[in-house]
Length: 58
Ligand code: SF4
Ligand code: SF4
Image (cartoon, rainbow, N blue to C red; front, side, top):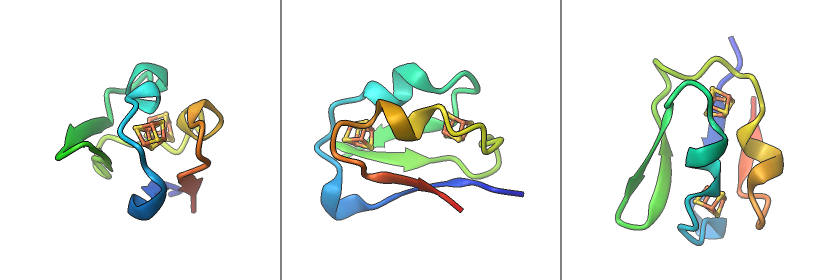
């Protein structure tokens, strides 16, 4: 199944992806977004919410 991946070097810690995820699959850790892979359903809502294009879904 597809899961979202955060490119850490691009993440600015804005938290928009956390608000966008309907499955609570993203948490913040040291101002970087972390995808909880076991919660992610690959719905891709987080990726377009990210202002720096830090999220890819593979
Ligand atoms: S792909 Fe969907 S379920 Fe996975 S982290 Fe992004 S918004 Fe959440
Ligand atoms: S929306 Fe993008 S920049 Fe903002 S916390 Fe999420 S991954 Fe990081």
